[in-house]
Length: 445
Image 1 (cartoon, helix red, strand yellow):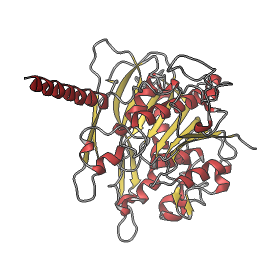
Image 2 (cartoon, rainbow, N blue to C red; image 1 turned 90 degrees about the horizontal axis):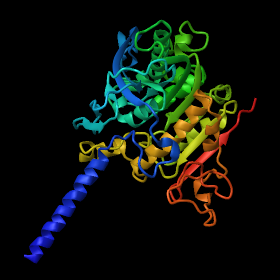
Image 3 (cartoon, rainbow, N blue to C red; image 1 turned 180 degrees about the vertical axis):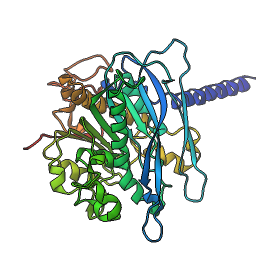
Image 4 (cartoon, rainbow, N blue to C red; image 1 turned 90 degrees about the vertical axis):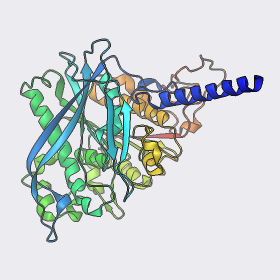
């Protein structure tokens, strides 16, 4: 009997462990973990979610080029997920997100889900005039895979408009020209449309958004789109001008009839997460174009990114000499660092797991670090909060070289002040700053 009781206790303990583990895995990813840096915490606002659709008529569909290189003309339909500061009634139900990502070739799509903190169609906070953030996902991705960022920023007083770009299937080489042309154009079109609606007295957006303060955050192909906005549009010496049919990209190049459709007014900041920067020997932007960039940049990448490569991102950082910029590097990090955690459905296959999880870095840790750095960067450049610069200007660019002397006693779990004799990056906790690099570039003009 004693053996049976012991076995029963062990089974109950094991079941409790699995239940707790599942609960932790299913926590809203916008809520940072206990070891996240200081600025990752949710802000003072409740969060609302509104789903809208924008349509841009008569656009060339380069994903469907025929044998003669002619693209059909179609209306471009872009679903949007809009996260915003809201007034939420106590007890209101938060949304649960669900979507699919492309499956391994020949296999079904990968389903995934994520619990949220946003309430669908909740009333917006009145009179906020919040900065606008355009969020662009990676190739074949979707906004539901980046709810960690949209919800968290909305709680801090930003309106985040995430675009569903409806890319061609992942791995289909025929689909590549489409996103190379459309990603920057989609971002610019959505930004202009939202700005115009806010200025024209739109019932939802007017009074909620400051159309003169815009940031773009992009991941992977979305990062390429974001950097193209920082560059002022397509580069006539860059990859799109050489890789795409001249009849379709030409009008958007400088001096072309549609060049203004590839630009954003009021752009104050760009965050590029694991951005696509071109193909080997064919960068998306020339060094001369990058040297003319003036928009503040935050680049985030793993130094073992097997999809976009670290060297291309580092080259962009080195070449944007006219901009205030930061480069955050996750040592041994790969390409999936900016994604939500993998839900139980996604974990059913290695392909599904690899869409979301990094082989080395714990996902809740990467989310916390990214939220901390992005929040500091946006607050500095979008809200003019000069106190945030101290979180970005670190004394030791390699976090492993930072010290927290035993003589500088503080409570366990205290955040670093980032001041001598403590050189652990400001806002990080003792022992929770390993494996990072943060490089700063000041504008030279």
